[in-house]
Length: 87
Image (cartoon, rainbow, N blue to C red; front, side, top):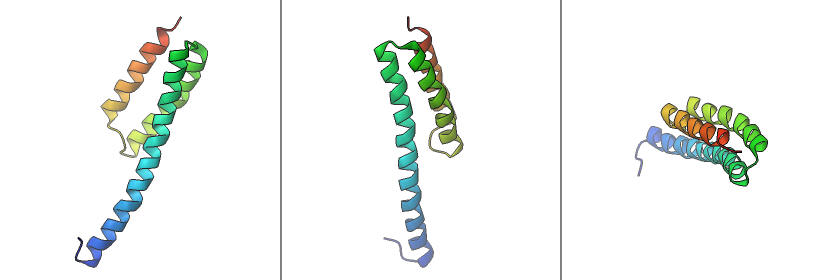
């Protein structure tokens, strides 16, 4: 348990940031899930549209420190490859 007042404040700040980051990560995962669903359904146009929305959301998450840059690049690359393989 935190002893000093500054340590207690840091605990409160971390709790707020954790909640914000959890929401952002969840939002990005929702975008990625939409792409996955479109790929599974075999709808190339819907998959392209979903990917166009997912890519900037994922890169914003990288800028905010939620995902590593290479992780995001790998995910985008693999999704792009799968979308192009449809049809």
